[in-house]
Image (tube, rainbow, N blue to C red):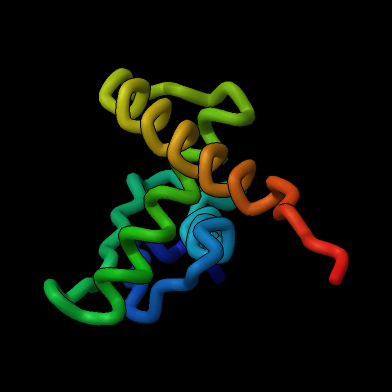
Length: 101
């Protein structure tokens, strides 16, 4: 019975933050009366930390693109991240000069 659960422990984070969000949402079922606590276990200077950082950036980008900027602290960083991502993407699509030999 998932409504009895009030704690989520994420020990193996995913590159796709929606997978982790789905795991957290499972505790927020109809009938849940208790506050839900989520723990993300991340070790500093590890692959998990890198995955966590990437997932956070993806979440920020997703929130920005979809207009879900609920946290003011994300505004500036998200704009910088989006600009950097778009610059990288656009530069990869620039035609390269070719020579006919």
